[in-house]
Length: 437
Image 1: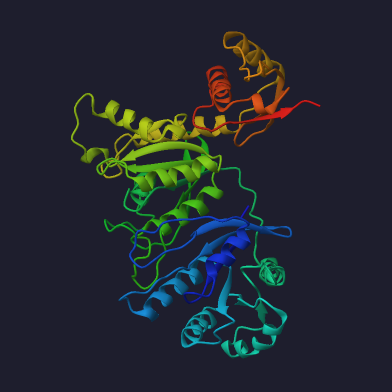
Image 2: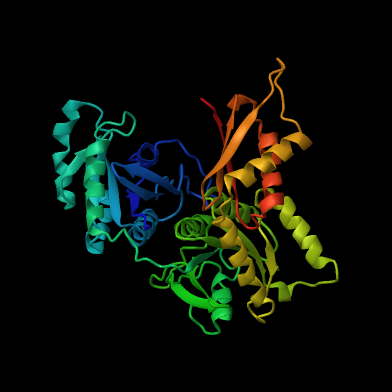
């Protein structure tokens, strides 16, 4: 299912981040290392009426010695390229500024659907002052108050109304969707080219080189796959993906469409903090994961190097302890054939169903080996029975006497027992406890 994308754009100090938090329904924070740039969040999901959509926050620029217009223009161009619908935010207290006009001209040239939101209109009397914003040429201005949440519904009605013209339903495709995610310059595109045996995707040694994202079909051992590259965008030779925010954005969008995620690490450079963040997105999304260590040819090795690197991965990515690891080289094409057998196993695990009778036998045996915990008052957790309610990832509901007694550690123990009994290699599994009525 394709999710439409809404971008929030505008000059500084118009309340973009406040409105962004209102749209996604929670307050999020993110730190940007680039000097002069601060935001509450770059990327999240929101919903309105019957629509679920992605939201991009392009705001929070604090200008120091940087050229003002270039910063605004860069943010607006990014939003234009990524978004299906754009929310342009202006400040109702300050009126139309030259920078508002500058951004509006860019949006007009883009031909993208745009909804104009006049923020900081906190009372009814101020509504009479919004008409000057018609000169931006972006249609009817919507008075809103990000701090109070006023008027936001009308603006979102207008924005989501454009979704009717977007092909949200995708064609039926039985192939296994495999996305390649990772920070810039780990060799995602090189891996695809090496797997396919042709230069299907543009490759460069420059981190963040801009490219068009491409879906590619591939067959391995009679199984059909669709490879989803998370490469950047091509825009007049400019490099936009050289900071974390754009690689994370692309990872989010690719992961949404995936059955299995190939999380690519640069074996030559090792693991950095950004790797953890991108891996966390795949885990939290409930996708199957295979860890691929690329550029293994460039690593000085002895007989213990691979095992030491595996141990480091397990230490740094404890939440991905279920993910198998492949060591490959796109450059020399060594060990590439080890990837897709692991992808197949992970995908099968992701869609695996367990019979309730067998599941409950494992639960009973698990409790007998390690009795359930008690609280300070001596009340013991009782697990009456369990059932699998969904796949992708496998999700189990355990009916208990008191959900408060289901500690994280014991839930983790049950998860390990289920993995020991049924495998589930490559996929997260979710365990939900509910009180039996």
